[in-house]
Length: 290
Ligand code: G1P
Image (cartoon, rainbow, N blue to C red):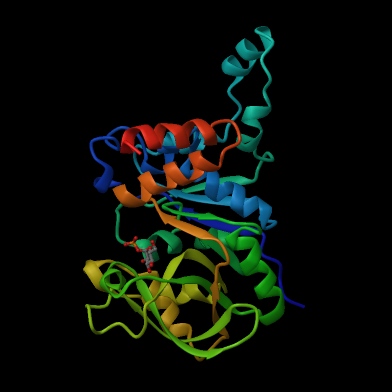
């Protein structure tokens, strides 16, 4: 019997320098795509996949992320007094005790951030969400991965194809046998390979289901690409000792860690919203002189 995926780690300690000055006093995870901060999309996706406990790896200046998922008594009392509907706040409510934060004091890389959550993760498989990566689909990316996990177990990462010139910004897989259900065996992993040295153009797109042994591997993991402790390097060491598969997400993905991806996500989601889609389309035509 496979252990269910009940816990998810959200590394949110990053400085967000690409979005300065917007992120000087606001965590990048709180930047909204229309009216929902990025972290909310990731948490929604986690809950849809059956995840119960949220583990935020935070750092200095990130308290607003935790506050976002707290009860705002004054706000709610005022809204109620004015006869306003509180349903809009429903996604921000967390079962008491199901939000845990740990601190990453020094930014030493994604692998180090995940390792900071080891005591809370304990001895069970867990999910990881990188909130920069906005995944939109039905079912959501993690729900699709959990379904695959229930079949093959072990470790799973979400992957997608990008143009050759983009691979060096990501973790890249060396694909093995292609199995059913959008599943591919992973036979190798490289973090931020140089152009021309990547084993494929299939990149890790920010969703993981990993076995707890990765924490022990991370314990002794030295610095890798960019001088940081890389999760990809620790995962690479686990290949061959445990099953490792990639899931190709049947949906859309926006890399909101860069300006263009962020703008594209905003446009795409605005165009789809029943309450504004038509107006946004008309607005876009006007702006483009069409
Ligand atoms: C991280 C991971 C990388 C992954 C990427 C997805 O890189 O290390 O393997 O492909 O997220 O966005 P970062 O964006 O932190 O440089």
